[in-house]
Image 1 (tube, rainbow, N blue to C red):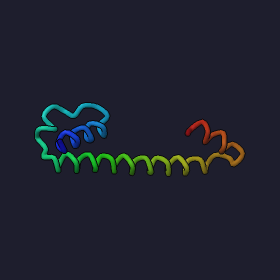
Image 2 (image 1 turned 90 degrees about the vertical axis):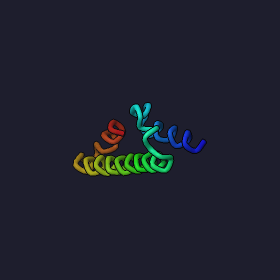
Image 3 (image 1 turned 180 degrees about the vertical axis):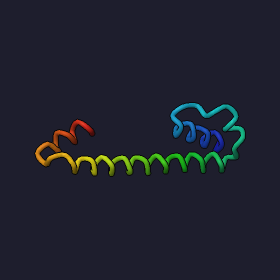
Length: 73
């Protein structure tokens, strides 16, 4: 049952079905580790993107920042 849960968690992180043979080739621990790694990578990417956007908005004149932020976010 845990194996199925880990496979579903991995596919949820991928956003699609896993590549053929991947689920069968990995142990339950490896499936969970891969899903956890992907979730952590997505979180780091999101944080980096938010930071880059905020840095970019610093170059927009102060009076236009609110409007530019509303458009970009």
